[in-house]
Each structure stands twice: as C-alpha cells, then as structure tokens.
Image (tube, rainbow, N blue to C red; front, side, top):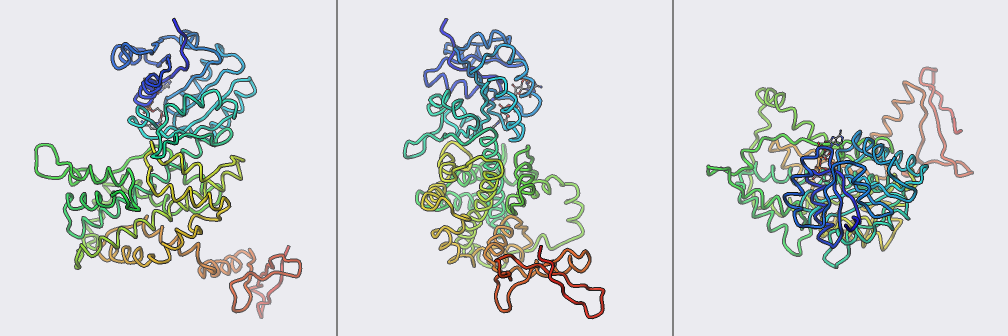
Length: 494
Ligand code: NBP
C-alpha cells in the first residue's frame, strides 16, 4: 500500500476536516486518535473510500508515513501535545517533522522547538484559523519553526490553505520557533476586539429601539461590496440576527443569554501585552467584557439597585446609523493598531522577524477576522515597513482625523442611554493618548510618585511638550525634596 504523505493526530472537528482537506488535494493521509473509536467512526464515515489510512497504534501510524515523516497534531493544547511528542519520539529519525496545529501557548512552542531541535527533529508550531469550515475548505495557516521544516510542508500547506480573492494562498512562513503560535494568539486577540466592538454597536442599536431584523439589514448593508466594514464577522452578524427562535416568533438573538465564554488566547494576548509593556486597551476591554458577561448573577443582583442601565434613546435612531458605521471603523483601526503594535514589540523581543504586511495578507481569507480592510493594512506596511503605528499611515490617519467626532458622539449617546461601550471608549481613548504630545495625568502621577517615593521625574521645556535634555542629549531627571523646608529641586540625571 502507498505510504501516506502526511499524518494527522486528533480526530476531533479540526483534525478530521484538515485530513479531508489534504486528501481532497491529492494527498494520502494517515490518521490516529487517542480514543480509537473516533478514528473508526471517521474511517467508516466521511473518510470511507478516500486515501485516508486509519491507524490504532502510534507505531503503526508512524510506519504508515513516507520519510521524512510529517506529522500534524490537532489536539487540545498543553499536556496532550507534550504527551504525543513523547510517544512519537521513539519512532522518529533525524529530519522528521512534528507540527502542532492546535492553539498552543507560544512559549511552550519555543520550548518544544528547542528540545526537539536538539534531537534533530524539526518542529513547527502553526496557527490554523477558520474553525471547522476553514479547516475543511481552506484555513489561514500561520507556521513558525525552522525554515527547512517549513519547506517540507510548504506545498501541502499552500494547497490546503484558503485563497484570497487574488488567488494568493493564505499561508506564509511566519518566523522561527514560537512566531506562528504568537501570531495566531494575537489574531485571536484582535478577533476578540472585533467581536466586542460589533457587539457594542448592535447592543446600542437595540437600545435605540431597533428590532433584530432591522439591525440585521444594517449589518448586511455594512457588508456591501465596497463598504469599508465588509468582513466575515459583519456578514455572520447580519445572518445570525435574522434567525428566529425555534417554535416562536421571537428572534434567537433576543433569547440567547448574555454570557460569552472563552478559551486561552484572548487572555494570553493581554498577558503578553502586560509583559511587553504594550497598551492594548480595546483587546483587553473585550477580554474583560467577556469576564463581566460571565458574572450574570452579580449583574442581575446589581441591576435591581441601579436604574441608569435602562435609559432610553430620545433621538431618531436612523440618524445614528452613519455615525455608528464610521465610529465602528475608527474603533477597528484603533484595535488593529494595538494588536499590530504588540506583534511588532514581540518581533523584536523574541527575534520573530515578523513582516506585518505579509501577516495581514494571510488573514485576508480563511480566518475569522478576514476583511477587505486587511488589504489596506498590507498596503500601509508595504509603503512603509517601519510604520511606527498603524494610525500613522496617511490613509488611516486621514479617515480618523476627519471622522473621530463620530466615535466621540457614539460613545456619548451610548453612555447617555446607559449602554456600556468599554471597547469603543477604549479605542477612542487609545487614539487620544497616542496622539497626545503631553498626557497631563501622567505628569501629575509622576509628581505623586516623587512625593511619596522619591522616584524622580522628567521635565518639559517651558511652553513646549519636548523633554528637557542636557548638552549630551540625555533626558534630565529631577527630584524635589518635599519634606525639606523650601522644597529644593535636585537634578538626579544618571
Ligand atoms: P479539541 O480541542 O476538542 O481536542 C480534541 C482532541 O484532543 C481529541 O483528539 C482528543 O482525544 C485529544 N485529547 C484530549 Br481533549 N485530551 C487528550 C490527552 N490527555 N491526551 C491525548 N489526546 C487528548 O479538538 P478541536 O476542536 O478539533 O481542536 C484541535 C486543536 O485546534 C485545539 O488545540 C484547538 O484549540 C485548535 N483549534 C480549534 C478550532 C475550532 O474551531 N475548534 C479552531 C482553531 C484551532 P480523544 O478523542 O481521545 O479525547
């Protein structure tokens, strides 16, 4: 029997769909799952009659593969990934390749890559985005690991990946060791931000008195061919909001509880941002909002004592549609600017050597955040690969400057109605902060820190936002002796 071109471990939705996708592109695929019954069900079901080899022992699985052996794991992140690596190792030779396609923590991937490299085994940690349908019909793939390892599977990955409207495969070598999983994590963080921003706009419309089908129509229009908001998430919002609750005249969205659960990637994004000191308030707002959504009992109890959360919108809802459209676009630009700033910082700290323009290209199809807006991001970074922030790109800067008042108005009206808009507000404030030459509150707290802890402060020149520097160009640092009569100021430049 012909040996398999590649093996897939993990016969849940992702592994099964990827195996079928690979087979449909002409590859023979060996499959394995810890619980053998799932492999059998797959072999007797969707894989029947296809070039898919079911195996029930790890040894048989590895033996079924052509050398160098290429093994893709689609299993739960964490201990199962380490467990399978241990099980595979006795059967592998130098130059064989293990791929972890699950949502693993990038630092685990760096560790696994290092350990396996020492044994001569290649290791790729790759993001696979697009859920079950993406895995089956074409996901966006974000592989990180040794370049030579990527070359072993480049053709398979290009064949199975989603294709953007210009035919380009949504896969590219991302960088060494943990780069692929890091980029997938931040992709998911950005996805959290997008979902929260859309959720806040929809909830705002609902509070102005609009019914779900009216909101669905607005979303469908915003997903129009040339609309700047056109994206998969807007499309599925429009589609899902028209859905009626089974057996009733109510819309399903009005019966779904306001509890959004999550797995690890949003939290990892925020943790990385804290570790690398990169502000990502909108993505953090999205994660915190999911946490707040899960505090249902507390919110129910608190809502009985406060009435402002049920304020009514007094104006004409139709007037707010265009305002909300541009407000959402600006908030989205702000949120992506934050996510990209985090990618850029990580790239230099972890030597990932990320190419932001190429990453945005990979995300144009197959993944959850696919949107035409990503083309604009690619163009912005192609025009200037050293862009200090997405908001600095002339096209985005122009739109934001001309329309920021609409985001301010959206937030103001939402708050007057008692509608929380944590992500929209933080997106607005991020723009205000990053474009402020001086942040007064920071100056005040600098003084407070010096007062209680002698932590020192920098100064600006009189009448100018520029930092005070000495003749060598070094920023001058000072401390006031607050408890000494006359409170003398000393220069403490180091
Ligand atoms: P799951 O994340 O539900 O994982 C199921 C697989 O993990 C099964 O093969 C299961 O084996 C195996 N597994 C578990 Br659970 N515990 C194990 C253990 N202790 N030892 C060995 N195997 C174990 O499957 P999925 O939803 O297909 O996702 C696969 C990966 O892809 C995950 O990392 C996920 O985060 C990622 N991902 C999922 C999606 C999505 O939309 N679902 C999208 C993108 C990425 P068993 O059958 O014997 O229990």
